Amino acid sequence: MRTKERPGIVHGLAWSTASLCLVAVLDFVTGYEILLPLLYLVPVGLAAWYVGRTGAWAFALLSALTWFADDLTGGHRYAHECIRYWNLLMFLGCYLSVGLILVRLKASLEKAQELLREKTEALRALDSSSSKMRQLEGSFQTVCAWTNQIKDGDEWVDFQVYLERHLNIRLSHGMSPAGLQKYRAAERRERLLQ
Image (tube, one colour):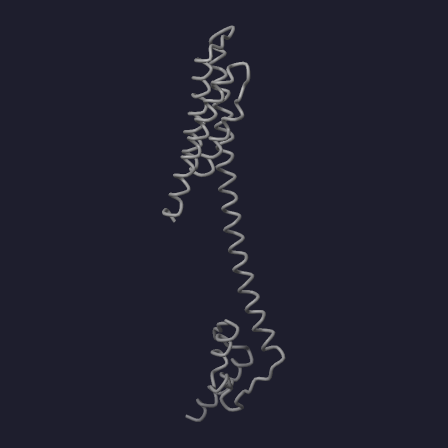
């Protein structure tokens, strides 16, 4: 499974990095008057989806720091410098929240797909056994009057073997109350004869 995931992670990292670079250039070119914070969600989302939790954390932090660097180099002046850091924390919180939500969403989708596969497999097995039941339902089976064996094709098999082959039913043995009475009666007769 690791070999299948590797190309997805590598491609996810490549696309996340490329989109982060593109957004950073766009943000720098447009200046501080046009805000592009939502575009930073693209690399975060790609990393979260294809890389996972670590990718979400890393690209949320990288996106927030890239915005911060663009804001610093763009010459934007605030009434107080603490506002720049507050904005950095707010963007980081938003990017991280969206990234982690996407990680959870992907995990939920994968779990739902696995459950669907299991359900489909169970339905196939049920359909197969129902089909066998329908085939046997209206048919006559030849049973030996002396041995209680059933004719299965050209072979005579025990009833238990027949059920296992055709219906996947396994039997265990017990004793009914009537059988127990017969057994005890036969045992008493044997003792009397001895």
